[in-house]
Image (tube, rainbow, N blue to C red; front, side):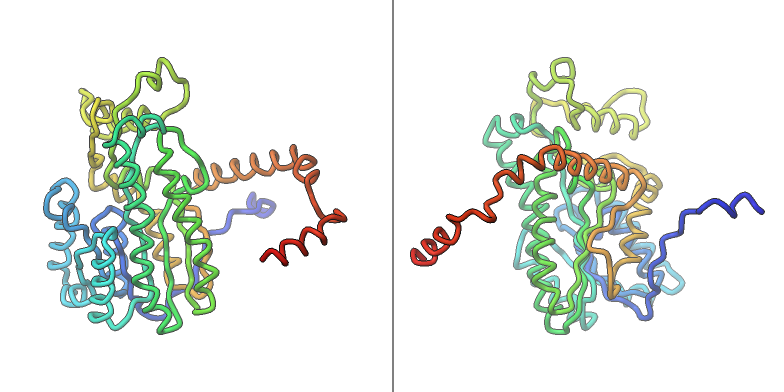
Length: 364
């Protein structure tokens, strides 16, 4: 008997194969996830409408360089006519409903339909609850966080739903993070925006199921979103400095991480998150590091997109699964600890209930 005969080996994840080319709409194709996914999809014969935020493409070279390089790659492919014919780049600011409607209409005009909407635009606001309340400028950051991470996806989904309903088919794939399960100190508003869009999606999934429209939430590790999009930090308060507050605040963790990623002996990028002013930056990851960081997520999205029976939620990576399991275990244990208190207020069997219900009915 071999050593593996009595050992149950982990099974490789298997997804149904795709029988025909799919038509994708990607909301942030100039992000590392967007670029890598678009390249993968074109190589496998799919069609892609690639949304690009104009201000990032035109004014932020550190953000647009990789996407411009990708477009050059498309032009130099041996099968370049096929790649070009299956790629449509559109200007898209998901915060503007008119642009969402226009971009979806252009996608349909170009390829005849949209099969899969992949929402992947995100921004990260760093700061404790008090730090994000210390000035009108900081309060604006909270508003902007929800405009981008919540209302943006809502806008593009609303623009795509009539297309999906008309053909009785469609798949919405929403990229969030395990922060949709886990609160994170120093990222309260980012986590709140993630929980908000996931609650929206959970409710929406029931509404659109009769139209044969599927919805999947993909949750990679937090770093996949945080380190591949713009980070904006509020000025720190002394009360939350490391020597005053033992909580593992995201500002300090990200600051050290960014300095290590930059690979210089002198801290530079990470220090920007400690400034006494609102500061925005794009993490200085190398191209190879970005591709490695998003590889698992891209594989999951490409495999799930467009299937007849996709998962409602898919957590990417061992660390994410472990973290979410621990959170669910804690919730379950706490529920059991207080279950007597919870059931003590149960009103079933109370003789006053029928009379109360009758009163409510008459009042209504």
